[in-house]
Amino acid sequence: MQSIGYGAHRADAPLQSLRFERRTPGPHDVHIDILYCGVCHSDLHTARNEWGNTVYPVVPGHEIVGRVAAVGDQVSRFKPGDIAGVGCMVDSCQHCSSCAEGLEQYCENGFVGTYNGEEMHSGGMTYGGYANNIVVNEKFVLRIPANLDPAAAAPLLCAGITTYSPLRHWKVGKGQKVGIVGLGGLGHMGIKLAHAMGAHTVLFTTSPDKREDARRLGADEVVVSRNAGEMAAHANSFDFILNTVAARHDLDAFMVLLKRDGTMTLVGAPAEPHPSPQVFNLIMKRRHLAGSLIGGIAETQEMLDFCGEHDIVSDIEMIPIQQINTAYERMLKSDVRYRFVIDMASLQNET
Image (cartoon, rainbow, N blue to C red; front, side, top):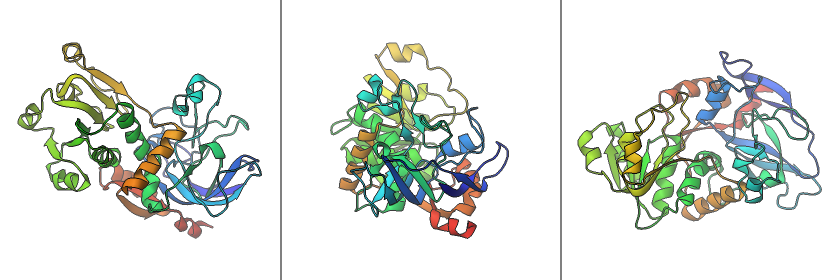
């Protein structure tokens, strides 16, 4: 199936308009005309081969919301005209223990990424949402609650589930004190979700000018992490900390804020590794340092439904696809509050 989008041909080249082929839709497939696609830092990492695994050409984008154009004759949950979403995965082996538990993101044979992944059946590469359409197996297509703005809902498909999954896994809720490290695309969703779950939510930021915005998003307190006094005042007091920062930094500064048996979970993926935390900061309080990767399809739908119930969407800045390279440079400077979303109507100018 013919598609048009924006992608990169090599690591040092800007994204540009290109045409490519999608697989022919099968009986279990949903053909979606893409309306909006969020811009994730992973898109930039992949386009520039910063993780060393990019196969070119690559078309990024895994925060996709669109309208169903057609469905295969075995599809039962979607029909033409439905608003649907596609997140970070489009397939998995479906038979390993993780897949059997609804944890496709931890597929023992490796899930198939929405872009830069090898399709399990055709052997071709997957291309993402910076495009006019996509074809996805029904099992990996998600329902978008009707009350949510579809453009602002797009980042929920990655930023939303990346923060929701660890909050749910570590049972964040009322009576708990929860920290969110970093106020970016992930961090602002972490604040909204933790607040909606009933936790006393504290933002850690290096930017004092983000205090007011953090409170608007739902933070009960804001701590400037470069202020030693503000940090010390919270020692040994957190049940859980969600660390969303995607740059190398000192983990010990936050580990010492956890209570006994507290956990800090990392969801940011820095290009360079963090310094190792001091072992005594772990063993003296039986603290835990963990990681988390998006969520399974069932949990992602649960997250979307939760957001529908609580009227939670991402704070976005809409851009045309022709501004994607500028958006990448602004994203590196944290010059967006808090997620770029591409309006795919702008692709009409490329036809």
